[in-house]
Amino acid sequence: MDVKITGKNMDLAPNTREYIESKLEKLTRHLPELKECLVDVNKQKTRSRQDRYVMQATLELGNTILRGESRGSELRNLVDRLEEILNRQIERYKGKAYHKGRGSSLARDMAEMEALVVNEGRITKRKRFALRPMSTGRAINNMELLGHDFYLFRNQDSDQTSLIYRRNDGNFGLIESLPEDELP
Image 1 (cartoon, rainbow, N blue to C red):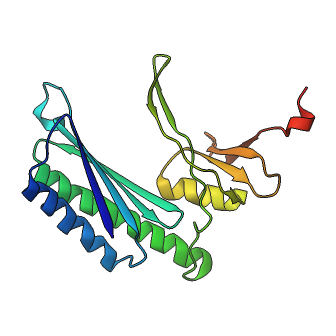
Image 2: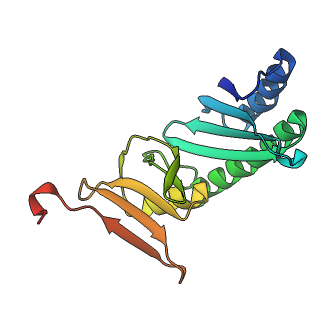
């Protein structure tokens, strides 16, 4: 597995990098197909010592993405907590895959979405993903797997960009884009 570590607003000591790599490489015991792990460590300018550091990890399993985040004042504790979070994500992923298809990967054709976090009308974070075709059922499974309330994907039936979201009544809603030839 390839572990890529980046630090923002700080320089990571070599022993800290080694500790992060050794802890996260243990995840390959549960998922031998794990290809890449991206780790972002951010030192925030805050008065609160509790949230001084934020560590995020993204695991890429082919076309499936698992994410985890932890906050705290000590980097080693963050790494330990992050490993626990990712282990829970992996168990959830493997459980869903087993129950849905008796061991088949439920997110093999997972679409990746562009997620915008908006604060007072400003775009504060931007993510870019390639959209791969998938069914609405697979999109719902991916949304639940990531723990999000919405999921952007390319609908394999219409080949249009679609958004699945969780409604307040517990059901799901689907927003579909119109093909260019149907635009008003």
